[in-house]
Image 1: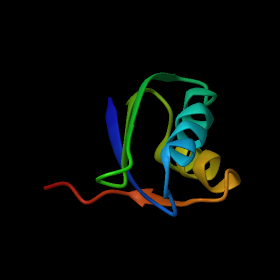
Image 2: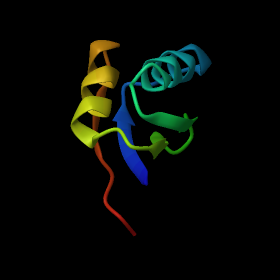
Image 3: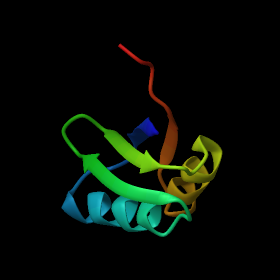
Length: 69
C-alpha cells in the first residue's frame, strides 16, 4: 500500500534526510521517497497514515495526507 503525504516546513536536503529517517523508523514501512521540490513523501508499506504523520511531526514538520489527483 502506498501513502502520499504533504509535508510542510522542509527547506533543505537536511530536512529531507530527517523526514526520510523518521519515516523509515516506523514499523511496517518498506520504502520511503521524500521530495523537497514537491513537498511530498511517498511511503510504501503497512504503516497507518496517522503513525507516519506523527513521526514527521516529532521531527518538527507538519504533515497531512495528500489529496489524490
